[in-house]
Length: 253
Image (cartoon, rainbow, N blue to C red; front, top):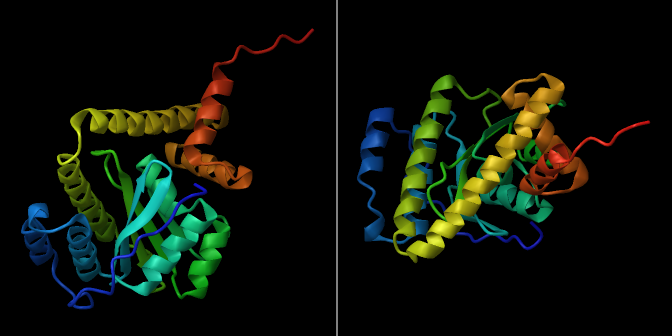
């Protein structure tokens, strides 16, 4: 994604550092109405609530990808936007791959076997110990991810995984509301493209699973690692793998 750029949304919202119990957070989430304000302000509320309810009190951001352009639509602090932009500059990273694939990508910064070595090194220097990027369910012309940067030194809990998935789903609903303001024909075409991209990634994962006898998660890691090694976008590499697999095997005399 060579022409990617980030769009920031200003400083951290008031109250972002205050913790909140899960029930109250979901109640506040339900009060958010897109029609009352723009997408940026609405997504910022989602990010701030996620930060307040997650037990790690992490920094949170929302990445949106439309076509070849990625941007950070909302963030709770400077750390989140800096690490997002690092990935945009490189053209790959967990937030970008989560957005285009719909996967949830969790990293431990000091795990040498994890993907995204350059990103992990930068994040670790910033004091981050664990990250999680949750792909937003496909609902609009724009795909995205909810990014969570954890500096506690402890991995995310199962409850944190559940909370993150809930907030990612809500962010996707907000994007769907935005889609209602766009031309229906154009929206359908963009949605078809997004679904095709994810379908190709799933096909590529299936090929890797068949060839390596591995799990779906391991297949995605292999695909993502190849994407980095070849400096090729995830969906482009997936399409090449599918195309190669569909070619008849050459006969050897």
